[in-house]
View 1: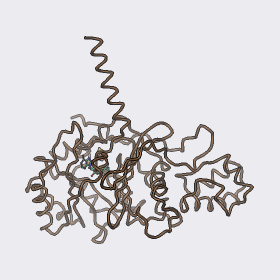
View 2 (view 1 turned 60 degrees about the horizontal axis):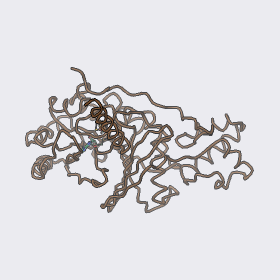
View 3 (view 1 turned 180 degrees about the horizontal axis):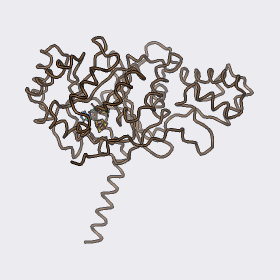
Length: 394
Ligand code: SAH
Ligand code: SF4
């Protein structure tokens, strides 16, 4: 059977896109890459090494966007730096705040691709939900992002740029500051992070670097729909917490709602979780489970979930996500009673199974609702054009 969507990785714009003015954007570059750019622009090796270290600190730890602020770099060199480089931020097309305090930003890349990020404040933490791709190739049937036509991988600069923009807007530079609102990051925005592995790894390395954004790997979670062959590398090369979008416990249902399951099945996926480097009882794997009415929410499903988690001896917690509907979605949300009953079965088996409250619903910022409004507009525009065409023919 034809698998919906293309389930192989999409091409990436990997190299930093050269700006129209010919300057290089330093955001997203590693220290070595900054050094190479400085050499390339004409500094000698010794200067390049020193300046790269200083610039790295100013860019990623202090959040400055202007070379003039780099007080340990000779004033005379500021105009030269400015001539060759910029310290960019994603362009903000729209910023919205929900009645519950959740914030959503619609961002645009220089090649006019739109993507979103969401900030969710809680009493004891603040979580930034970061996108890894524009759209997603995987077409999970309950996910709005999966219905987008356009897909491109985000660059490391576009990924780390989201976190830097959030810090700007919350006023949370420098990195060492205590009492920050932004305390956690989840790679749960638009896209499948393990289909953009290199860029996600490079961006998170900058986020985790003590002299960079300095956020501990224990406060970062990467969510995957189950790209089995990349999971071991994710553990070894990134080492953040793992979340797995399981959503179903039988082949039949998971094949339907997460089409990637036809390539990497449930047992294979759970084995990869059992092998995930760094998973233990102190650092459990989160299994996300979207609750779809009469689809995956029976008592039997809950018991099978427990059986599977036990079979693979997984240090697990289960996140139950009531399905967030979107226009035209082919599913309904499970009833609250069903969610409760499901949660109780898992919980009584000794596995924590909290029900996630949807956040930012009024601004379409809740889980799985991310789909850029410009895409919606172009869809609406297409519909209008189709109607006009119909009218002309009629
Ligand atoms: N592609 C990755 C990360 C982004 S999706 C993944 O699938 O894991 C983040 C989470 O939101 C996933 O668990 C996803 O299944 C869930 N999700 C998607 N659409 C949803 C919806 N309409 N309602 C509730 N959760 C949804
Ligand atoms: Fe892609 Fe995740 Fe949405 Fe599936 S749930 S379509 S993998 S973003």
